[in-house]
Image (cartoon, rainbow, N blue to C red; front, side, top):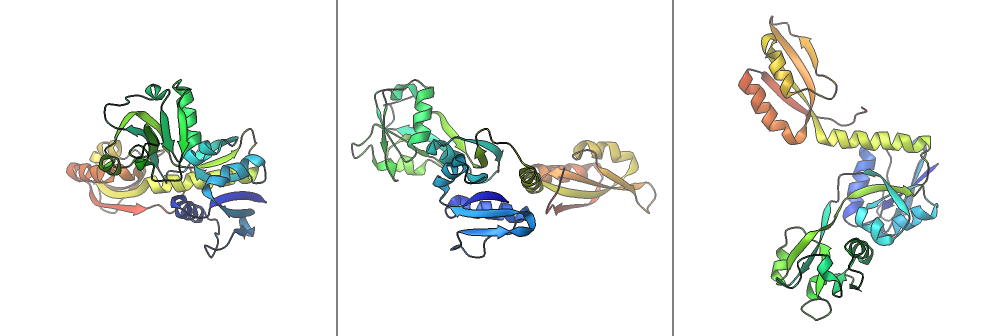
Length: 282
């Protein structure tokens, strides 16, 4: 039976549960449950602290785990990414008082406050700032500079509003772009059960990224319409009872949907409908 770690709480928990449910796996009934078994699919799920998941997977006690890229790197555990899952995105940046530091290399000899020492240590090594000192804090690192604990901070940055309120500004390139990832122990193979899981999860990713677009168009305009909706392999085209017209179905990227619908209407397509895709295999 495949053993998979799932975040038990926090920002990644609901996203992981939703994705596994959409992939056809039975999840726990209560947030108090520490594990659940999906006997039909041959999978046992363990609900663990997100920051501990990579450690359990690296030990070999669990086959796979869903956690954040930042958490996996921060743990220092020997795991590798199998699949990026497209939710729980965040960006890590350095910040300091304006005019004091302008690059990661400039942090050499400085103190950096962060809640993610493993992430920051890796980045500092890449930039040759070996003499930098990491000050590990549990949270609210924006106050560290004002309180004299650090010269710079490294943290998740969304809008930057909190940093501005603290009199700080980001500098240098992002430390890391993080998101939820599926991880396994470095060097582990992929049994058949893992292949099935990956097919299902990739199907969810595609279903979330595409819609099924259907429309009617005159036959002489079909080639122009198909240029707008090429689909994955090729669109499905069927003749209509009304002579000279055809019906077209095609998978279309959700992010581009309304532009495509407008363009189809302008060339003469009608009855343009978009439907969500619940699941798929490509």
